[in-house]
Image (cartoon, helix red, strand yellow):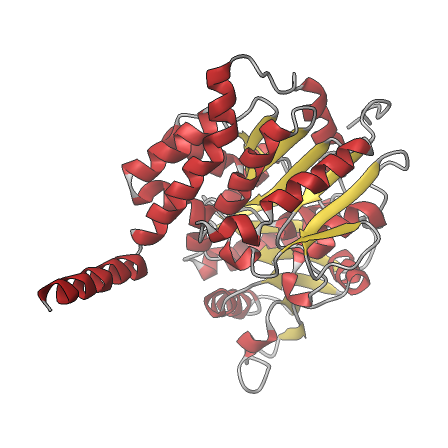
Amino acid sequence: MGTVSSEKLKGIAAVSTGASNLLSSGHFYWHYLGLVRHRQVPPDVQFRLIGNQSLADVDAIPLFSERAHLRRFRVGLSTVSDYRFIAAKKTLRELENRRIRAFYVYEGSLADLALILYLAPRSPKSFFLFNFFWPRDWSDFVDRSKCLRGLLTFALRKAPSNVRFTADTPKFAEYLSRKLDVEFDAFPGFSPYQFPERSREQANQFDLLVMFKRSEELEFALKVIEKASEERDLRVAFHGPRAMLGVDGRPTVSPRASLKFFGSDLDHDSYVRLLTSTNTVLLSYLKSHYEFGSSGKLLDAHQAGCMVLVPEGSGVHSQVKHLRMQAAYPFSPGDPERTAQKILHLLDQSQRQRRPSRDFSNLVDYVFRLQKSNNGYKNSDQDSRFFDKSSWLVLLVAGILYRLSSPAGLNWVAARLRSIRKNLLN
């Protein structure tokens, strides 16, 4: 991918309520700092991270309340204070004066969308890229009722022309386009890490690296390893929550399988070393949790030159097909025996292992390309100005209805009605 001239595009800002210095924030912090650390941001381009109030970094602007991220789909009047709408508008004006006029939200939620639709018409010279993240939450919102779906569609169609929408995976983009009758592109794949080149002759410390997040995913992987180790010795690494490993911290499998465990909290250098010393990666994810979702681990593993196995039919699988990854393959999450055979086949073909491919990884170029192709905010007439500046209010209404229509919300409404009836009778 070529580099876009930044002669007139001097700044970019990532907006993330999840970004913080806390280790529990996971990739939200490292994802953005990786752009700066590995110089994916050109030296003549300013980069800023607008995030949680716990942020403390030279490239960061602490803005949102610390509870904002936890309330990303609990939208209501409190969203205005949690997300600090007025302060955010002031912050954007200051950044615009410093020629930072491209803003993107990667892990976009309902509350994030309300914020962007509030800011965009008030910053007509800036460009906003909003990515629909959290597919399980969004699909629950969209499928909850025709009313909620209609309100979201209205807000998107009335969105200012300086806002562009994407979805986290091709499968999720297709789902949203069909449900909302609004066109969505898939967010491109990228990894904030840079891995050393790998030769075909390089010896690997591990035959297989298992990535997991849930106990069911670990159990499936252990069944796969048990089957595969019946035919050959295996050196296996695990990367996931240590709490899932049980009391003794080490599951029992075939003696032909040598196991080593790494926690989810690996630092940057250790994570890079782990991937570059691995032949094949098994993303042992539940398809139900990744029906539309993406995996940054897939992109990291691909960048590191590993062969990767992903759940068939998942959002992660749609990433593989969209990016035309030749070293990534689907597996059936309900069939450990066939998955084991596929792993053994890949290990036998390890001499064909690819070198890292960085053709999809420059996020900054992608945002600038979209900004350059955008014609900016068109402030055409009084009616459109009114809808442009108030579409975020539609989302607040939708958020309140969404919460009230949940089991907890319905119980609250019922309790309030009982209380009112009791007071009237008395």
